[in-house]
Length: 314
Image: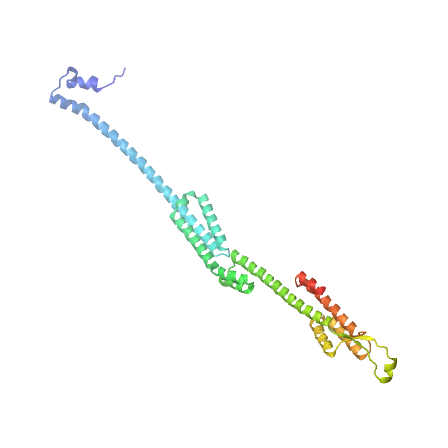
């Protein structure tokens, strides 16, 4: 049966501790050399082994750290070339700067999703920050003419607005929106101008219509000689002066359509020659009044409705 060697049972009695008194120096030296030194050496060897084991483990950890760093650097080197090329193509494309910024952010997210270890890379942070600053600078540069474009758009000057937008060779979404505003304003300006011209035309037409209504007068017919006076029966007759006829011709040329002008002039000439045409001055006047009212109705499409209605019923 194995026995256990202990200090209390085996060493202490030999040192004299068993009897409660010390042993001699020579004996103590002997016991130290035989037992204490070997035990201390064993403990030292154990400590040395443990230290070697810890050093080995630290070396393994350092080696793994170096390997991981090498893998990260390799991944970074592989990705940096690819991402740099993608960003360069995006920034040099025809994309709007706002779209470029969105593209940069998406590229950042995709890159870090595929390789999470790159998220803390200072190199990638610098790369994406530089790309974003470039897009923002491009956006600011492209929008430098926006205030001027807004002014020209407010005037409806589409050509000037487009020239400002094309100054840098790219039309951004903001600039395209301002161009559409300029086009809308131009159409509104045309509509107002057309309405203004129609209104002015209608006002002149109304004045001329009132003038024509006042032309002519009823006169009493008189005999040409003394003999005729005895048998003459006075008859009222509507007549216009030569000056009034000339004024009416001017109104015809200004307000009537080419077709109505031709009809009026042919009938007036036939009347004057006694070969037909207008029955008399009153029928000539009424013809013109009716045609002027027809023209007033045409103004309905151009002038404000209330104005055209007032003209057509005047």
